Length: 93
Image (cartoon, rainbow, N blue to C red; front, side, top):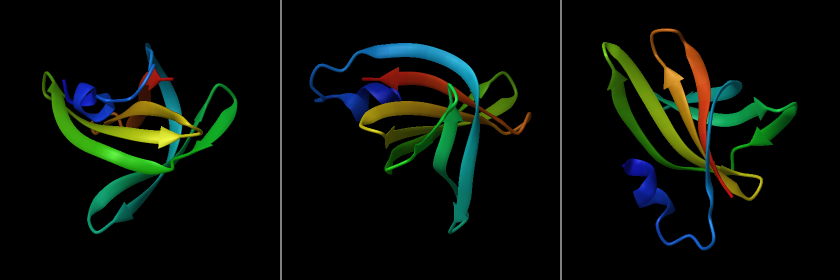
């Protein structure tokens, strides 16, 4: 699993599966989408860094994943290219 590689070596991180829809503010930089902030639980989180990006599929639907850090924690965001929607998949604290 890709996120295990990204978070390997982090001390005392607990993983929580969230799988909730979120609003994401993104930019397009050199032909790639870059999440800049997301809104979850009534709070806006500014993305400090995008550590990894990868694609996957759920049936015929292409999914774009992003491992990011924001507000001192790590998050896995997913963009569904068919529905044009974002999900917060996991939180690592």
